[in-house]
Image 1 (cartoon, rainbow, N blue to C red):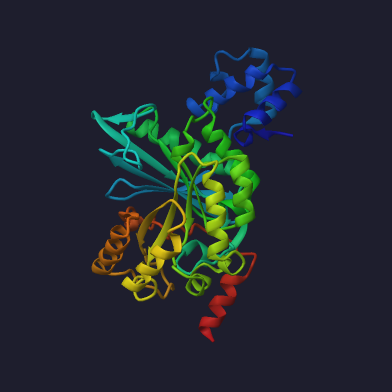
Image 2 (tube, rainbow, N blue to C red):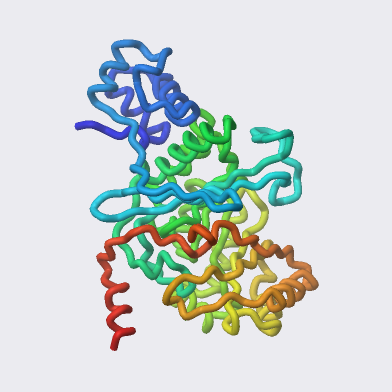
Amino acid sequence: MTVNLLGFNRDQFEHWCAGQGEKPFRARQLLRWMHQQGVADFECMSDVSRDFRGRLAAEAVISAPAVLKDSTAPDGTRKWLFDVGTGNAIESVYIPEGDVDDEDGEERREGEARREGRRYRGTLCVSSQAGCALECAFCSTGRQGFNRNLGVAEIIGQLWHASRSLGADLGMPRPITNVVMMGMGEPLANFDNVVAAMQLMLDDHAYGISRRRLTLSTSGLVPALDRLREACPVALAVSLHAPNDALRDELVPINRKYPIRVLLDACLRYIERAPRDFVTFEYVMLDGVNDSVAQARELVQTVRSVPCKINLIPFNPFPGSGLSRSSPAAISAFRDVLQQAGLTTTVRKTRGDSIDAACGQLAGRVLDRTRRSQRRAEGLRA
């Protein structure tokens, strides 16, 4: 049976190589060829023995999901639509930023990608599921329903393809300096595959991304968050979006199972092992829903016990959402309340909205086996 080597982290690779009668160092060689050099042809792996190259060609492949569409926005944001089979397609987004410092204000030193002599950050937003079952009110992916979890090769394949493509187009050895697990799906609902993929992203023989520059975003699956704390702690972003349980129950339905206080306690436990000493709370700004000054003051009291940064996200509309973006004045007033209370607060710059690549707009193509999207459409027609 042919195996896809993109689906192996280092431990799995070493075990597979041992089964081939090869030493563990062969796994490290292959990881470097595949992930650092972007090589898919075993015959190009010059320091691998001829005999082993022949066996690799007979028994293994290096195969990322096929690209169905490649779009670039005027601001440089780039989006790929990947075919993951059986009628499903997922999306990944690359966001380039020049002249930047690290998120915590420290000047970047190691592994810094440079273009025209400037500090540079290139962030890839990676999907973990074909669709999403959590149905957050403001997210286009959730409106598509859910089909299945992505495998490790499908998750890491997004990074593998983007690295190869951008490296060739931009002439940069490391065009992707940061990865965010914020694409389609809830990463913690696909725990084992996401952790294995992140281990590859962190591995110095593969992508060598630091834990501080690899971020996982979750809506709040508390038991899985506690597991992540032990298995693979990376930077954490939490989709909060409301200052109280009553509103969050409507916007983020998983809150009915894991309410805000339970989630915040899990965040405090997570910080003990995390590479950053704070959690980023994501807060999408919805006109007339969660954007009042009174709600800003309530949010201050809600999160005060957790070391955190607040990232305010202007809502990115999509058909049928029934929601609107808060006005610039409302966003500024909300931000000012948080900042005056001593909370580090940023407003996310909208990128890629012209190609539906902005936060909350990823939809891809999902054959919904939950039938939630069909029932919603039937309800609208009724």
